[in-house]
Image 1 (tube, rainbow over the protein chains, first blue to last red):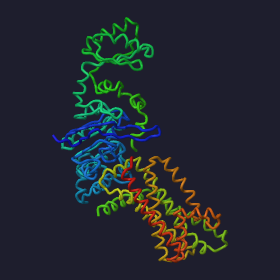
Image 2: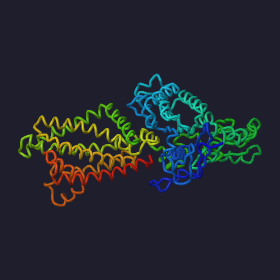
Image 3: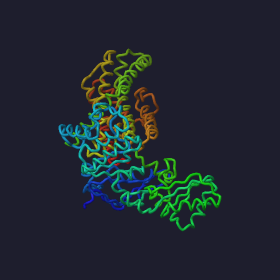
Image 4: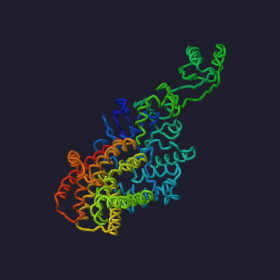
Length: 338
Length: 250
């Protein structure tokens, strides 16, 4: 199988006020044609920076990248004609109509007017834009805009479509709708390379994914294979006296034979066990004996978050203010690439 | 050929954006008219001359000023487009990098000439004497300065990326350039060192030549000097700004 995207040891650093920041620290990727490939990681992990190098927007510091058969650094023009890119910001002209945007975009790729008009109509149909294609973009809803952005990225029938955080800011319904559109693209032969910091999105949408953190790939595989790495069940225990009891509970549980891995954070103990059903009553009894009060307890099959946690010691679930993104504030600041 | 086509497309795109922005249109038309309406009476008092004489002297300077301010503010829409992802959307296409820079500049230039024409027409109503040859050459110089300052402004916008940093640079440049150009207060009022300093200001040459050209003289020293300064400076700035578009981090 020839790869449609291949990189070896891709690197990028930025100068900031706080000195040199290594945003991408040696990323090697191989993506085959016709798959939905995902980049999962917290804000500031280096996902967007990698994407922008692959799409010729950002000079590569070192390493090599080939996209659609051409070297990104040496043949940017050839790469550009074969890829579509939809940034987090979209980038449609707000004062123009959806159709005007599509027509201009198509012509910038060198296509003739008549051809672009036909292509625009096809895309309007494909992405359910027909109804409002003649309205100015400024009147569009979030979901409508996102679909137009994607249509703009597809106007020249690219072999690869890069989507940077495609569903950020969308309501659940629009998100599910967009997922369907992305799957349909894959089914029609387009390779889709997307970044996301949503676990559900990576899990539900991607055929294969890489988990990225601090500029490095920490795990790679199909969502299923990745989750299987974390065998058994995950149990999360919140303690009533979190401050005081978190460490104590961790100490008590660590020695138990049925506990495979355990981590403690802010009064929350998270552990993995082969069989949750038998482990659960035993650990409740144990904590009770030690007079450690339990606020809540939850058991689940492993998610991609457990994979991330296992690789990095942190959870992806934390919001934008959480530790996952605060771990590299300079990167988070740099990366949105506005 | 491809570059020309891309310039055409991006010119058209920007023109549509400008024409659909009513606030911008109103401000664009009213600013030069306000200058004329407010400064002419003032200068008439100062110089003790009738409007017609004052306008002959002052109107070409206003056009120069307009070219400068149109150009310098070009970067504001660049910042806006950066924030909206427009610049990235264009840079990821195979469109010529030079076209991405110059297309929008050409559209604002066309609008500037429309505003200029209005100013001249209003000026004529108050006695400004038109010398077509001189005005035509002046238009060329105005265009050169406008391209030069626009390209500079767009490049600074791409490099600073934020409205705060960009505005700081532009405001910092505005004051000395405008003062040392002698548009509103002739440089002959200033001390020798100030007059020497003025010679490092491209706008100064445009303003000097604009007075000569406005009076219908096509071959004065001021005209040659303006050409000798503006043409190479414009070319250099365009080359630099194009390389900034090519490599822009944002």
